[in-house]
Amino acid sequence: MRRLLLSFLPLLLAAQPAWAGQRALYVHEDGKKLTIEVTDDGNAIVKPEGEEQYGILRDGHFYLVGHQDGKLHVIKTEDMAAALDKVMPPFFKQLFDMAAKDQPKAKLRVEPAGTRSVAGHEGQLFKVYGLDDQKPNDPTEMVLTHEASMQPAGQAMEQYSISTVLLMAPLIGKAAGEMVAQMRTIFSYGAPLDMGRFKLTSIETTPIPASAAALPAPPETIDQIVASMKVTSALPK
Image (cartoon, rainbow, N blue to C red):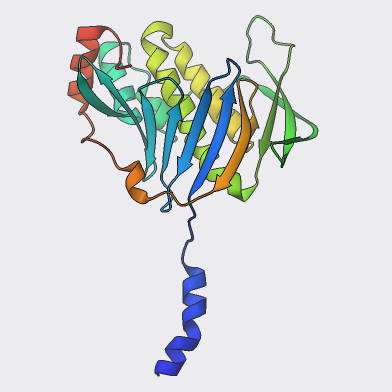
């Protein structure tokens, strides 16, 4: 029996999901860096250069972490959307309900335009029309990939991008819904190598402990987020 178990051990180990730490570096068009670290257990941290606020993708949920008035805030994006619905016309929570019939749809035209290599990774070049309402016929070029090694960082980038739109929601209103829909449409074509604003410069496999993506405090409740909005007319920065 012991020999039988030992003979199956390699197969059992191979069947387990394998994670490896990863660090991806993107550069914004303004020259600032954005670092995405994927931990050994598959969670992630998104760290924009020069900002105290950062993001954590953990167990399928994205959290914004930042300070305001000397206090640490940890906010889950779904709860942020629900809080926005309490202080503005209800609209935002449905952005996270993938089954909602009236979920905003992106008015984009995405056309493949060959391939392009970015930071040593081959990706599909797309021309995306409709991102600029004033210039609907002017495409934005993006390079996206389905390369397996890029997907963890790509998922973190998508959630971070959506969270930044929600932060602007008090200023831009329902336009935030369309922007979220646009992002989800674009990211459905693959992980980003070059999005125009953000471009990959390097990605490496490196050990990153699971503890790196631990939440530094319990997430705020929806009522706590609403109270913060009413006091500051904005979300923590």
